[in-house]
Length: 259
Image (tube, rainbow, N blue to C red; front, side, top):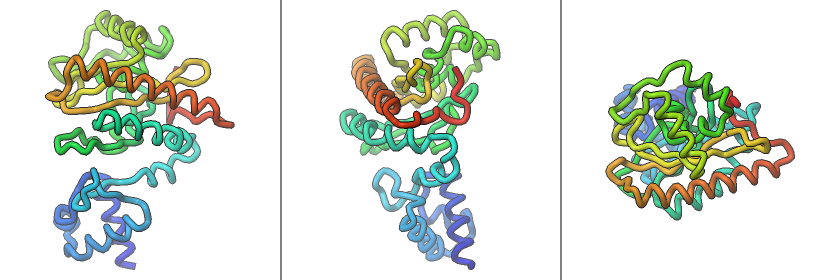
């Protein structure tokens, strides 16, 4: 019984601190390092955790917890369709690729494919990103109706960094540009060290059910890479949307996709 409890405690701690190593887990949980290591091996064998970025010294959750908790939402179908297509995007860019779904004034990260580069962006699954200050969020927002956008902006635009767009008219102009070119960019608007390009995944009536992004440290983002990755992420999102529309029952966009 104690080994089962230890495994569950380790699973919860990995979820809170991922990516995390055995030494940090043992200290945080006040467990012998050998006990933490056994729990990690058990969880890995059961498919609940995986080596982070291919490094067996650090661990992160798989999407099994999301699959168990969200089967009723249709996200499992979304992920099953999206991940193989996202893998090709990661291969072509060698940058971290995110899949998010809309939820009210945020988008929620439900899948992450990591770069092989040592300097990378690491966000835990379940992280909420502001809809007006992230590439994923702006891709979703730009795809909504004018009425939905007005309702979203009525709540105000919180400033996160010096580059966050907090002026209503400036954001509306940005959203128009996103619709024109088919992808959104983020140059450190949520966190100064995080930049990204993203495109919306649309359902059969043109409403956003998800968004896909290429993410990297701001120091690695250039105008050339932004434009090149924008084309690739737009193609990827279009492929995912087309594949979703071929499912017998279209995957839901998440807990509160919104229109």
